[in-house]
Amino acid sequence: MATGRAHRPATRSRGIPEATVARLPLYLRALTALSERSVPTVSSEELAAAAGVNSAKLRKDFSYLGSYGTRGVGYDVEYLVYQISRELGLTQDWPVVIVGIGNLGAALANYGGFASRGFRVAALIDADPSMAGKPVAGIPVQHTDELEAIIRNDGVSIGVIATPAGAAQQVCDRLVAAGVTSILNFAPTVLSVPDGVDVRKVDLSIELQILAFHEQRKAGEEATSGGAAPPPPAVRTRPADDGPDGEVPAVMPA
Amino acid sequence: MATGRAHRPATRSRGIPEATVARLPLYLRALTALSERSVPTVSSEELAAAAGVNSAKLRKDFSYLGSYGTRGVGYDVEYLVYQISRELGLTQDWPVVIVGIGNLGAALANYGGFASRGFRVAALIDADPSMAGKPVAGIPVQHTDELEAIIRNDGVSIGVIATPAGAAQQVCDRLVAAGVTSILNFAPTVLSVPDGVDVRKVDLSIELQILAFHEQRKAGEEATSGGAAPPPPAVRTRPADDGPDGEVPAVMPA
DNA sequence: ATGTCTTTGTGAACGCGTGCACAAAGATGG
DNA sequence: CCATCTTTGTGCACGCGTTCACAAAGACAT
Image 1 (cartoon, each protein chain N blue to C red):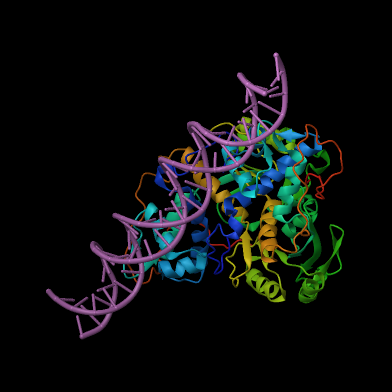
Image 2 (cartoon, helix red, strand yellow):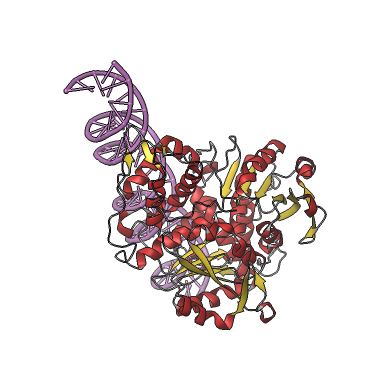
């Protein structure tokens, strides 16, 4: 998922496939819910249903972690919660900085799902000086100037970028230079990072576009955009401004 | 990605692979940026670099759409923008409702990336009566009671769920019953939907957990959680409360 | 202790996605 | 008009991920 040079052979880390790692949080959530209801054990079938996956896939996923089930019975909920948490590294404290405290950054700061998983918001950082000191989610916003100091002092290795697209790469560079090695990017830009740095991106508009594709497909293709054939490729060295044939607004998202 | 019964054979829709569809928005963004800079044509190599993918992959992706390039020259930027937009269904207007106007919902309402892609926020809906009428991003919040009417009146087929986990399934059911056939789910829950309804989910904490996994891996595994072996599986019918061996807080995210 | 029954763990087959490498296509210059 | 050079479009092979189906393992009853 990293966008820079990172053409990782996918399943590298000790043999746990990347696809499995991506599902572990899903299992963990389902198991946590069961744990709260004091359910002692769960079968692969039940847990798979709760997590929304195939039971065979779930069993294979767990087999990568070790043989933690009991045949004829199922899996011990508490024990599995512990094992997955440990595998994901959630038994330790992960200080996280959020850069860019706009609407999204504020939402992230308030998001309960972080703190409950071992992630601690170490600092909120914004480039706007007028934001400095203003508390968001109980944490005072700090200015970008402090970025390097914060990361070094708190030993932050995970950074969240929630800035406008234009600022993302610059922020990314500074985070990486200061020692951050994992980045969660909400800005709609491709980030370049050196080897050894992981980038995951979440793009809200991309998800919607994918939905739109399937939605259009479901609506049937005859009523799409008229039966008329699309304008021909028209070989030309410069497309010139002979009328914008695409009615898509050419506006970059904020 | 759908979580309900939707075990779609992945690449089904007219032959465009799902993986390709997921990358089209990426290409579109890069192309839009080029278009703004009035770049007439672009080679697969350049565009691939801008989108952060392999150039062979990009060419193969485009080949599913048709032969839109010119050998020896590259692709006409404007024309490609039009073709991809059309394929994704972005040349038409997609009214979208956002349910759950908390921090995240408000952030989504303000997100510029929607409006610029043919997505129009038709309504903001929240269960809190005191929110009703309060404008968010220039749009007055409406009460959940209005949900069905709004969807029917505006012909909304895409819904965004940004509610707490507990309310998500109920909201989902109502959306689907009212005619919504595509759902973007930000609530940390697995949604059950009938066939024909697409669900995509975005889970902020899952992404962080995946990063934490790789981060832990990078930090080396010897200092992880002590050299002591983890507690044994301990076959027992009821795990009882013999001490919670997992130090993971059993708190569901908000 | 033995048999039955449930559920795990996994071998094997299959299909999708990726990337290489090259032939076909067309532009460009002489 | 022909040669050369660039860049597309794709056949092919490989590897990851998914799923089936079943044997091994253990619980539980008798």
